[in-house]
Image (cartoon, rainbow, N blue to C red; front, top):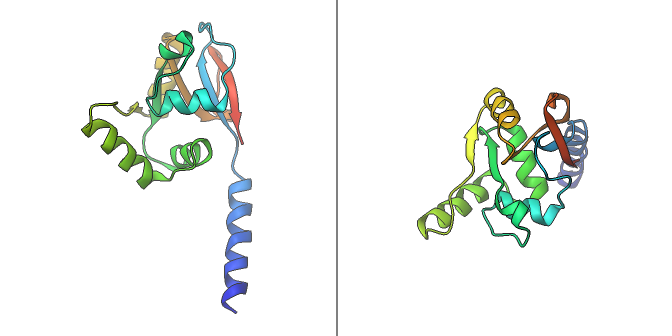
Length: 138
């Protein structure tokens, strides 16, 4: 019985996650960056140095706490909300990095269009003119 309940929960949860829309990793349409791979994207959002000088200049923007942000980090680096908080606490305490600036979706959209050095993520349906999609996160 316990096994059946667990299986039912997994099926329902997976159908809930599969029903979510994709996330788009975006930059300003003025940005010189044309594409980014998952490893480089992880490095940018985890505050790690990358080999490409073009990517070193990117400043990530994080959405305020919510399901979209949790989904992004779970699918990008395989960490949940609490693990990311712990990661940034360690990085900040040791002086090795600071977390990305947190913004609302509206502020993110207005800032991103104005500044080609910013990189962020949004649900695909929120992408508008003035933005360039670098990668989709299913």
